[in-house]
Length: 426
Image (cartoon, rainbow, N blue to C red; front, side):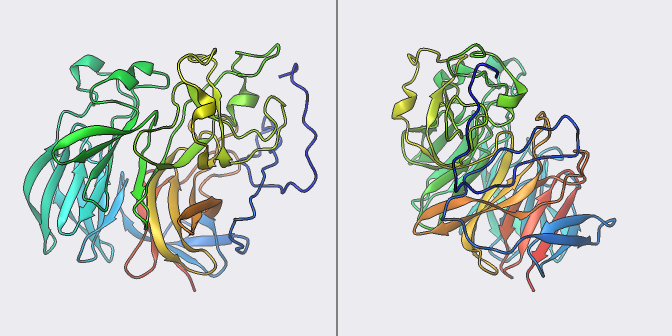
């Protein structure tokens, strides 16, 4: 971006951890503004994953990480009322129940089951085209009932077999409403906003009626209800974003810009909220339009998308509420959960499984992230577990979701390594 002046980094900005590798083509890490609301925790240390082939992760000092179960294709997680850990496996079409590492099939023959949620003894399972409910008792399910049907997937006639984000997530609100994430058809598919049911959205099902709860949510796979009842989503945002700022490089797709734009939102949803896609992008630049601007991921505004909303006529980005928290571009956040008391100084907070980028150069590494929950708000992203990516950018694991168990340990699914990890503090 030669036409854009380089930014002078303001004094007092803290140097943050940004993805990097030993690849000689890797760019220098940008400086990241670290909010004062970050929890003070010790630096992570190298820890061997017990039960693995000598793999190591970065974890808090004294913490123990072990392979609790081998589960190929493990995705989203949920605890049953009798303390079994459920694991969805979209590719296998089933949901497994795990107890002390032992596993059995709870339900099978499903269409890409993904999201799992309990309301008392009722289990909800989000298939790619519908949401089912089951009665759960004594480690078994019965009475399958289709609660919501007709959801879009790759078999929907109007999509002609093309659907990039068919997997669904589900959460149960305090008023018993169901919240369902519906991913976009593709990277830029504005027609999703006019579909029925709306795609790239969070839907709400209550009183027998399905309605759009939040718009412009490109792929809100992370979906959970906070302790105070608020609904939060972690979003996979768009790729190959052109430079929106005026200058010789405006409209160009350059790696130096795409690597850090747009951020991946972690947003609190209210009825009717719009997260902008595909017309507005949340912007991490502290000094917009300057090439080496420091980055911030807390309370970030939106900028117009050059491809779809160049003149602002599609959506007024300046009127969209700022994104509460965010993650680096192409982080690919998947599972989202809330933990009551993560050991040490962490305390209550949200856990996000960061799957890692698929096309960033250098790749954004996978990790388990922590966002402190204080005064009904989430603090900034802090790394809880990392080390799944090697120096050359290759990976041995990719976390999907982390949940806290009834024993206070953390359980982490990894669909790449085919494992569930148990994480405990000394």
